[in-house]
Image (cartoon, rainbow, N blue to C red; front, side, top):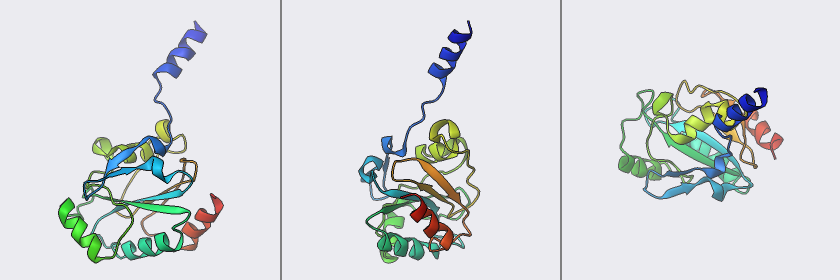
Length: 173
């Protein structure tokens, strides 16, 4: 009976997957396939053009440019905190004006039951096998290592160019 219950639990438990099994739609309508980022670290950031931290977009772009061989940044526009009034088409124009070249997902929720698939993966240890994480403000950052595993979560107050982020990038080669 004990073996049966353990087998049933394993069968019914959510499968832990790497981020590579996900494909999302970009704000420009094209697919962003995470399997194309294999062997690179991925920094996922929920962004909002009206946020007090919107200045971090330029820092994220600078970080992407400095580490383009080993890092990809993916932005997730969200109005989950009331700071993203723009539509996807308006975001495309805004991001072009800001000189942002890293991939940006279609606008979606990043918290709660309405969170997009990536943020559900980020938020649940059952799926990411690393941590349960709540998203509590814009420009919160998540780091995925070059094997597709979640390895860090960073508050919105931490600059993308900070020693905290740079040290984490070097730590998870």
